[in-house]
Length: 321
Image (cartoon, rainbow, N blue to C red; front, top):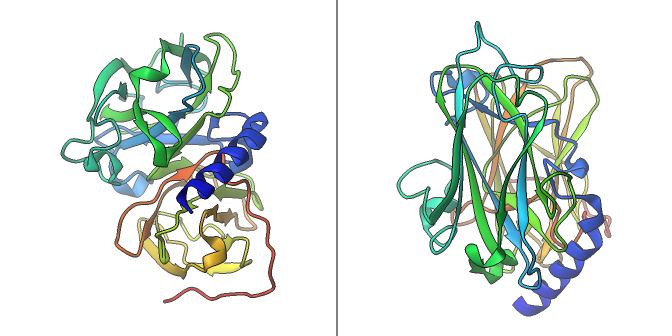
């Protein structure tokens, strides 16, 4: 059964590869990732001043690849200024043994050995117009420099962004590319995280999407979100359910909901939608993660495993309070 799920997942990746490998991906409709300096209070919408993303390179890919970072500095057009820009962020890239197999690497809080693996690159960025609103590239790297993990569909690498000083918000994006100068997808590649901190759209009635993957062992999922500012609605869609209302947090508050998994949903992705309210609201940042029935954080992929779920039934299920 596990092999069947892997085959379906790989076929889904091949089909969706043409959609691109940006982080966030266009299908997620999320403007930017965000990481605040370590002096910023949590109420700004970042609960730990750190964000970890993993990149999966398939076994069949044998050419070099690159990680491209859009606007890595803090002090320009896209970033969130508190007073005067005073923030630095550190980007560090890891591969090798322990990159993802180390348990601390898969937790939602940056503690213990979360920087496990072999350090391949690191650079700290402050306020520098040379990098403002522009792409910078790290690499080249080869797949074999990663840690092979079949359950994550290939050789795994880890990119950590940490706010090392200041209190401003760094807004940025990634792209997994075959080219150092252009955003060209790696065939069969993907990116995922266990906790997402991101900027919501300013304009009203926008819908953002998060795609947690449900493996064969998942019985129920619990979504956790922080600092949603009551800015709209949170709903779940799957191959079995649609319009399932989930709890969205208020300002500087946390909220959670439980959803029970049906056998039809195993080996597929869920589509959790953040539907903006009817008013425009700038600078709303949200922290989001999902755990299974054991409290273990689940991965969500920028390119949903098995494809974007299509509703195939007529049963509407209410979450457990």
